[in-house]
Length: 66
Image (cartoon, rainbow, N blue to C red):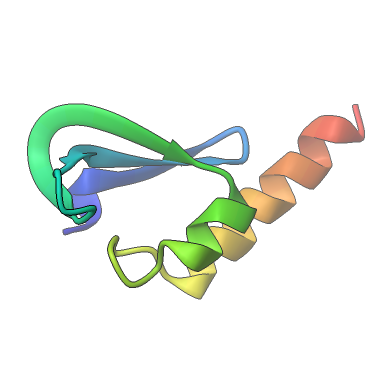
């Protein structure tokens, strides 16, 4: 499931779209973007680990320090 998730410049991108019932359907070609803060609340629906959240947070910190 890691191919449906990537981290760029402090954003966590998930390959999927949100269904009408609020769950995420993976592999649809759509792209959902989460900040690390949003990802904490979406962990049940998406395959986002604490490692992904920490990596995105550190990238944001490094980006804003430039």
